[in-house]
Length: 238
Image (tube, rainbow, N blue to C red):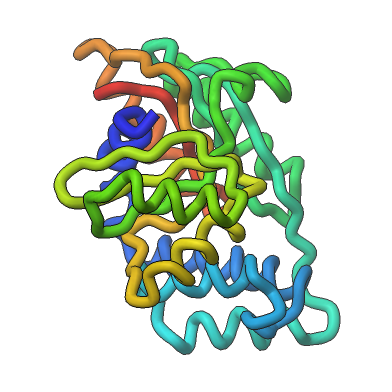
């Protein structure tokens, strides 16, 4: 699982190059999270974790503040979660997560990305069963047994732990995210998570042939240009 996760991170790294896009995506997600659970990170654990990730991504403080302030205003936008599944170039499996205030527009925009790159958008459940909805925590460390003991003592259902390059990667069901993170923070007060996210991790990977690579890159670029798209998960092996 870990290598599949790393493949996805590497192939998607270029989508974080445009700061304005990154800020916009975080701003929208913070707005939705604060509106749903309240603006206090101490009371809204999902918001607290999201703010941690935003700061690691160097999202400016004023962008974060504006999103939280906006979430507490009267009226405002009404964003809904939209998720699309299908097969991308080369037959890879794809999940596209969006936050939208206009589902019809968003579906049309995402479908165009599929059709313009010889891909096929599917119905709900088309490829979801081939991904694990997992909490992923990566931090500096080498002692897998000690970390596993900490998590087991906290009654965390750990899926896997990997040690590579002086870093530990913990995988757990997405429902165990907060419990796993808190257990590690309690055991290692100075812990600094390099990755602290809930993601769809592919169970298998699909190699992308050289002939399909240009179309695959076009597909990812087109999705990344859409303001409504928050995350793209795939099992492509580049």
